Length: 243
Image 1 (cartoon, one colour):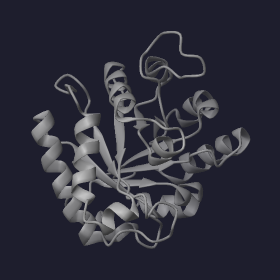
Image 2 (cartoon, rainbow, N blue to C red):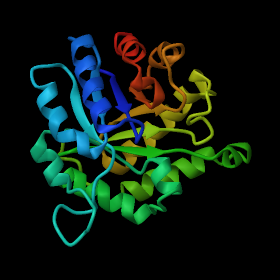
Image 3 (cartoon, rainbow, N blue to C red):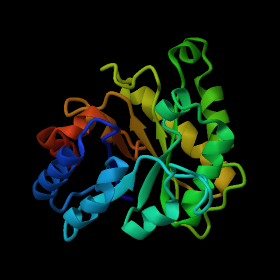
């Protein structure tokens, strides 16, 4: 199975700069050996669909609503994202859990809605530094995985991806040691398979850049990367995709 490289642009770019970056990445990245996904801000998604036509980049979204239609002011329907050409959607990112107070039930509902709309959810899980120091990493991750996948059926879907992003590593410049991440990925894969009855991909995120990406991708059970800041640099992101 191919590995997957996912760019999360967060809210770092203006509308104009998002279109410029998409155009530059399309020119720079051709025939990548890994699946390559970019997740721009919502306002830029529609024009970026046109920009990516005929290229090798796939499109993702940074979030979605908990259902496909309804009275949900300000939300974005997974079905509408699919209609535009979006293939993937990030769900439960730590910034949304912590800042916007998204709880396990909401993350579970969004996962189900995304699957119903034939999107591939990228479900983020991760522990805090305090939880890590107390030896609670696996306990915390398992609780997050179980709640996100509660009553989820992927037999007729395109699948699910889990993104392991330790909170203490995001944006700090201090990623986890690759072989330690490998052990956690093995654990997450096994637990997800028990719940779903099917193997899924697990990727790593948290201070990944052009200098350390190869170390993570060399690990057998790390199926790809979720990249933040480094994905905003054309040369750096392209170098990672080519690994």
